[in-house]
Image 1 (cartoon, rainbow, N blue to C red):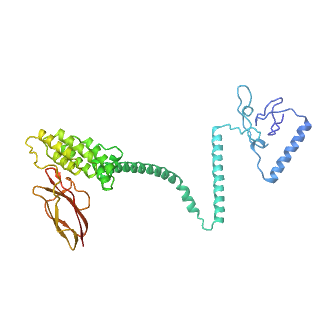
Image 2 (cartoon, rainbow, N blue to C red; image 1 turned 30 degrees about the vertical axis):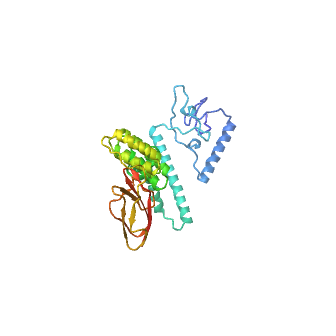
Length: 383
């Protein structure tokens, strides 16, 4: 029986071809003759067109012994069909399969190389300045660019972390080592040091926010209330802010806690006289005589003290002017040159007041035994 696939003769009543493994079917002599005639025409046509046929369709393929399994069926009958609907190639030996795979790999490389050459030729035709060497270098650097990209991301991440750390350290240094940072901490209630509130209060007082300044001075006192000198300074700051009631309370706090100290009595007596609180003034004198041993009650009443005088008098001067202040014997003189009200917390007169180029308004008071005089005032212009 002749195989319809390869044309080889097989044993009669064989089910599969012993050469190609194809299924055999019984055919009449006429059909076999027609089929043989058709195969000859296919062979002649293939020879004329010089087109090679697949191995499974080639009637002149070499004879190979197929692999026969235990059930008697050839390997081709057990394997699935390929994309063309035909049995795949059968390899009798492993080296044949390896050679076929190697040949396919070489064909794939050749095909890819041809496609690459065609692309380069098209680009060369489109771009007269195209250089194939540059294109090859670009391909070589693809991996380097990818690696450098990953390295760049890591570098950017590290720089970002370092920048955040530097900014954080700078912010902390600004908040804890600069006057502005101290004011900010005090303003937002994060200060743990009384000096921070003092910085804030001084700044508020300079900007005319007297009420806010008094509140900040009080917060500073709460953080350092056991320091006598600090509390006395805060009481004087209250006077500068115009918070007379707070100043009186602070002086009384110091008098009750430090009854032997003289400054709180003196400052409070002067404040009561300026406020016109004569009854409170006389009561404070009696209270001081009881609490402070050796205190001599002044013979004078709480009448006003003669205000000081200035020489030369106010007016216009050239170059500079030296002003001498005078008052009653035993009086202390306190003065300002910016037009603000003088208090016992103002500058104490101890020598001539020298004024240079500018305009000034001199104001002064004389204090005797805690009693303050009326305010003396004079204007000076120096050119």
